[in-house]
Amino acid sequence: MHDARLKPAVGAVKYVGAAALYQRQVTRYTFLACTVLSMDKLRAAVKYLVSFLKRDWDIEDYPIRFRFQKPDLRQAPSRWKQVPWSAQMVNWWALSGHGQSKAEALEDLRSKFQARKAKGGRLPRPGTNVPLEFASTIKVDRLKNIARDFLARVLDLNPDECLISDESSLWDFHDQETNDVFYEKIRNIYGVDVSALEGANLCAIFRKITKVNETVQ
Image (cartoon, rainbow, N blue to C red; front, side, top):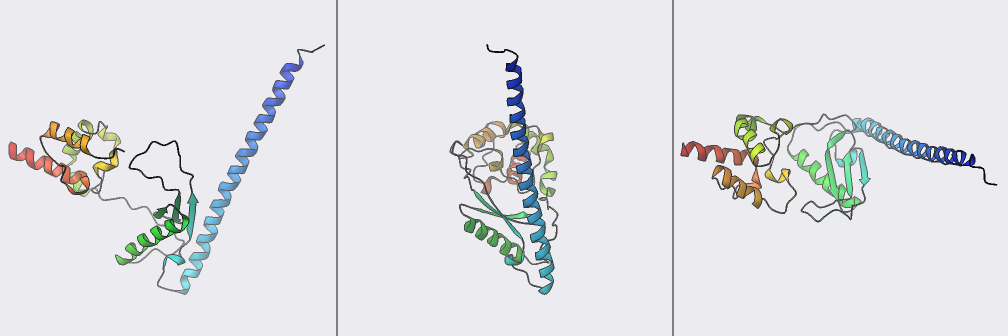
């Protein structure tokens, strides 16, 4: 005869088994994350010590971390291209390269490093922490009134929840193939054609809107 009292017991065993499996997975991923962080610290420490043996540093003198992220094939086609490989300077996280392969990501990182080196000035010592540098907002701060109005009326965003810089572009705020919808919206709202402005830079757009409106007034 089947004992109904066994059902709760069997259910409890299944629950305990699932919980144990979940705990093992969490422990495994935690271990992997700690291992990656430990390797980053080790690479950074080694490169830091070796850096005292020379004065002119190249990309090979810096600790680099490679990452691969499998592309999401379910993602709808857009102008945003999925790039699976990335190469990052450990502790200098703002400097990174991307590509379809590990070698391509490294070459992208190399070109950005060389561009930074060509600007002159002292390079960060390999392995040391480099604070993030935020883009300037001097120009956009001078145009904050039109900027707030633009964010709300053209982009349908709350200005208090947006951060834009002097380098921000209209391209940064959507994933469409062109800016045409927004150019049309700007013409309808402000009576200004900004489609010819290079890079759709927001500061340039704000200045043109302000200048045209001042002329009309």
